[in-house]
Length: 85
Image (cartoon, rainbow, N blue to C red; front, top):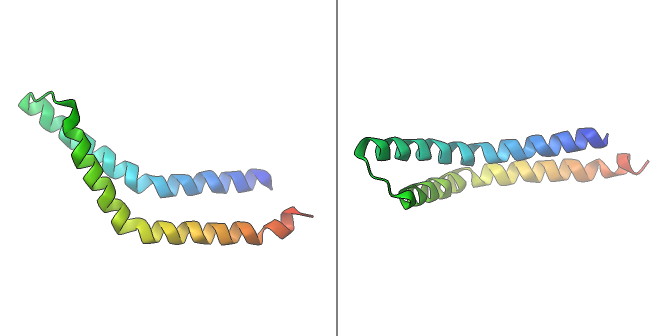
């Protein structure tokens, strides 16, 4: 039962992190391709676009993420009585 709880927790983390990390990855690749084609080698150029995209994704999907974590937490607390046996 503990293994199932841990598996659920890890899956929950993957589901919650995937949109943010995916958006940051796509923006990083676009900026890297832009830097390679224009020969601009400024390392701090990727910081601002990634930060803005991450903030936009969190603003758009924050409610969904909060709801998902809330449902998981309620489910976890409801299973405490089964774990105590």
